Length: 228
Image 1 (cartoon, rainbow, N blue to C red):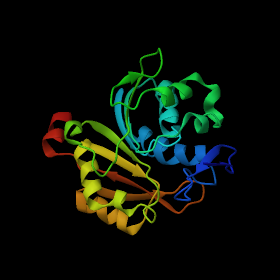
Image 2 (cartoon, rainbow, N blue to C red):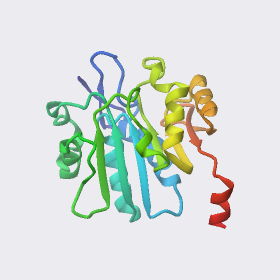
Image 3 (cartoon, one colour):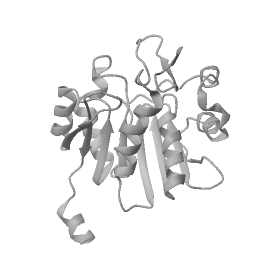
Image 4 (tube, rainbow, N blue to C red):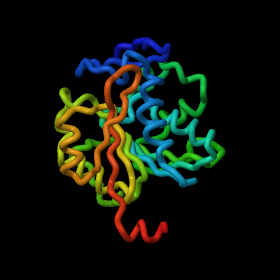
């Protein structure tokens, strides 16, 4: 892995085989905060307990920032993530955030599909799956999550991960009214989301990028009646 310093001072990696960056070269932290925290986590309103599923755990930055935001907003989080190729410890050790024991623990926790408390405050439970998104069995996770962070490598590089079938799986694991956020606003991605049943909205992208996407699973009428 090649380590790079992005424009906002935070570090990212370049995948040795795909040649893709794990984050924007304009800012790793800046992009993650814009796309996944402000447009994702913070957009889940009126809930003290939030559940998140992340596609592409990568450097762990999205989960780490979500943990910090959960503390700041006094919310508890059930966070689950999938990645077929977790980073090796020697690579993790080079990242900026290792001075925080919580960041080290989120990488050290086993990839065995078991929920673990990330810290002593009991506000954040982390479950990690070392598995292939294309063959993973999502049936046990039906309608479990409030948000999906879709952070796979770019659709031009791994188009199979952005297919209509995968987006239908994401739709199935979201609760009514749940949302999916991603940095990509590519036309084929938006179409796959719409075909899966999402209502798709383009938002301003991070750090000068034109657009990102937030897709919402429409609320069922009986859910709205219950809330009313």
